[in-house]
Length: 333
Image (cartoon, rainbow, N blue to C red; front, side, top):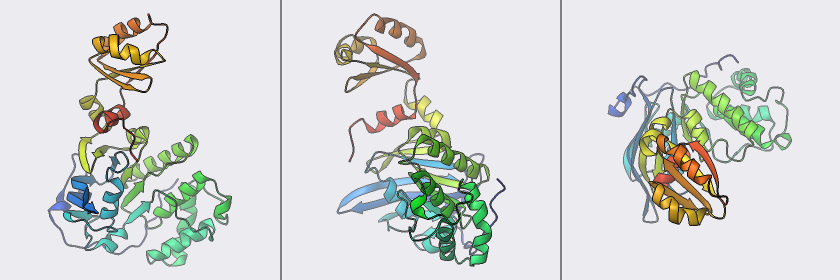
């Protein structure tokens, strides 16, 4: 697909501060910088001094269990919620002081689709363009490229009721691109989608990154974060507990190999022999997660093969292992 054409948006403020000068290794100036952000609700602090910066052209992920503060951080960045402390600079503008100007250069995909069911596909894009001050004729010129990008070519006149969940999600992504934004803010963009729809959205997001767009992503899918994010932060109880590139975090935080031992005999094995022969072991239900070094895999698999009541799965460590190590396995509501 040809690159989406430029949109006319208000010029960025010419003011500058130290936050504007943030530069990531090998990349350009920061598109979004957050420093010392704090926010409380009902006397409970839900964001506790969070700081991070996005470089131009990168995808930065915010990962964390429910209640970790991800959505609150996004709302503060967009100027929809006021923080008690901290500084935010987004696409060259101070937030919340100039949040409206900043949002003119930002595209947002919310956690839940908020498309207008009374409009056709094209009308949803057309009306959204008016929010940015675009003339209808300009938005109409962009609609074919937007729909082609979202895999919705030929659906201009379709009503939302006729679209699948994946189509609606892709339309929400296309709508976020109406203003040709410098920064895309995606709040769990693939939740509820089937694997085919999820992979298509991943492909489109990678295309945007290769075209120089910057993405701030929240997700509960660890494989999504590994595929898309150049860097990410893991949040827990309002604080960043780890930050870095996915593979770097895995290498720094977790043993390289995992053997999952499951079956009715797994809890008993974990409490006895497993505890004695594995340096780090976690039990979740009837599954024992054994975190081991490369040299320990073959001996442990051989020992497990002697137990007829056990089954074992060997795999490399992944980002989900890091996430669970840092935030725990307890269910969060």
